[in-house]
Every structure is written in structure tokens, then in C-alpha cells.
Image (cartoon, rainbow, N blue to C red; front, side):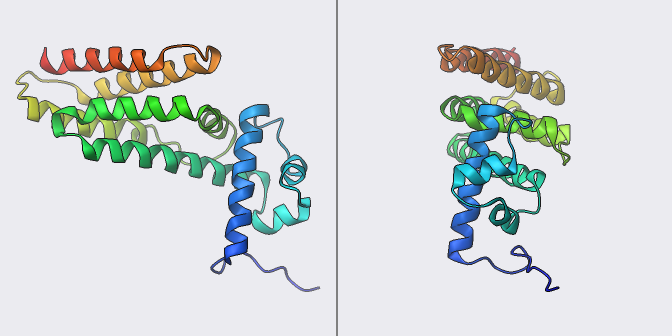
Length: 197
């Protein structure tokens, strides 16, 4: 019996990249709309208009496809946030981070649901420090730029601000009319008061 070629072991063709991209987008839609448990390879295949075997040609399992979808939405979120932070001055970088995170997830609610479902249902590296450390570094740099002399526990501040971002985004999932932009500004004001306090 001939062994099936692993499409990830070589550079994929343009057609294969397009198909993989389509499968990732379909997975984001289905996981966001129906949850991890309500999404199957058969459902993904049906929505993409291909066979389940064709899905398995590109991804070895449902978990592999969900991981790829999670990495895709995480890359979009971090890319958007990084661009906003890079455009800000050091003192304003934490505020740019808050606004960009909340703004991106407000305009892409399916990304939010995809992140939650993937982190809840798949194995992977969900190291807490990978979430708080970048913001802690921004807060530390902002503290220096502002000239704050008092000691601050930037790790705890970053964890609290990250929790605030999560809560604001979660509230918007349950109430689409919730003013996340206004909430982001209140979070920015609270952080600014802490830094300048």
C-alpha cells in the first residue's frame, strides 16, 4: 500500500495554501458559531464543499485544524496589536495595546470565540506568562518614560489589565451593544492613574 504524502513535509502549492486557508476560515466560523464540540471534520468538509478525506489530506485531525485556526486568529490579533504599539510613543504604548486588543476583538467576535474554544479544548502551549509579559514590559517602559518614581508591580498590573480586557471582550459577546470602546478608555484611564499615581 502506497504511503500518503504529507502535505506539510514540503512547500505547499498555491492551490494547497488556498485550500488550507479556506479550511482555517471555515473552522473559525464553525467553532465560533457551534463550539468545539459542535464542530466536526464532516461539517467542515461540507461547509468547504469538499470531502472529509480532502480535509484530512491538509490536516491530520480536527485538533490540528483547530490549532491552525487558533494560530491564525492569534496571529491576526497580535499583528494588529503590535502595529498599534509600534506606532505609539513609549508612554502611550500600554494604552495602544489596550485599545488595539479590545478594538480588534470587537470587530472580529468570531476570533474571540475561536480563541476561547481552542484554549479550552485543545492541548497546546497556553503559558500564562506569554499573555502578561509583553504588557508588563510595555508598562515598565511607560513607567520609565513618564518618570514614575514609586515602585510598581508591573506583573500584577499587567495581569489585572489583561483580565479587564478579557472581561470587556466577554461582555461584548453576551451583549453586542456593550460599549467596548468606552470601556477600553476607562481601562486606559485606570492604568494611567496607576502609572502616574
